[in-house]
Image (cartoon, rainbow, N blue to C red; front, side):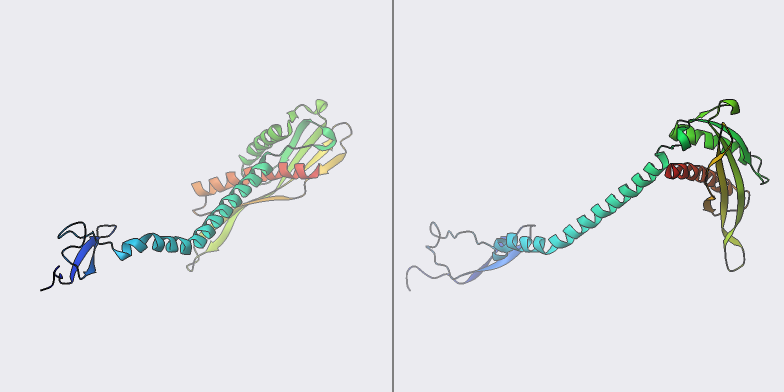
Amino acid sequence: MSWPPEMPQKQTYCLRRGGRREAVATGRQTALDGNGPGRHPAPVCPTALNEPQSREKVSEAWRPLIQLLQICWAALVLGCVCLGCGYHFAASSPVRLPEGMTKLYFEKLVNPSTEAWLEPRMRSEIRQELSRRGQVQWVEEVQAQGILQVDITRFSSSTKLEDAQGETVKSEVVLDVRARIFRGADRELIWRSGTITARKSYIGPEDGAQQREAQNDALELVVERLANRMSQTF
């Protein structure tokens, strides 16, 4: 028998990251291997050595997709911000009346519809909108630099969509107005808006809460568009 004796080939187990065990063939060992008789260095898992490189490869493979998702998200956020700012600027841009006038007299508002609440509500909304955005002072006719007239040419609620049984699924409120401004001194027409339309859809029965909400939304929208039209003209 030769000395030192050869030990049979054996398998040992090493712990990988995550607690998994992996069998590693250590080959034939002798009793004098290691730092002393019967002592052997701890086996190293080959896969454990390769784990950092494997993770780096996976990260490199996913990096283009992650960058693409980040770009898409940034573009979406920027688009929403731009749209929000655009709406805000349009709804708050200052109104400049013709000839620099700031004193208006609201002469009349023609309301041919059967909705009695519409005329006083629209008067109030127009006054508030022009006061807020145009620094308009509402005065008596003898003091006015300009005279405002508004005509409601259409205010209706009609069926927009029906189901297979002919029942109304969606309805729509439509509000059309026209406005004119006359010079206070000689009542010469100096500005006209043309027809301004606001539409609001709703789902629900006639004379229900959804219809009233849509009517209010259409009124507020048409007043805002009237003020915007003034801003674009002067």
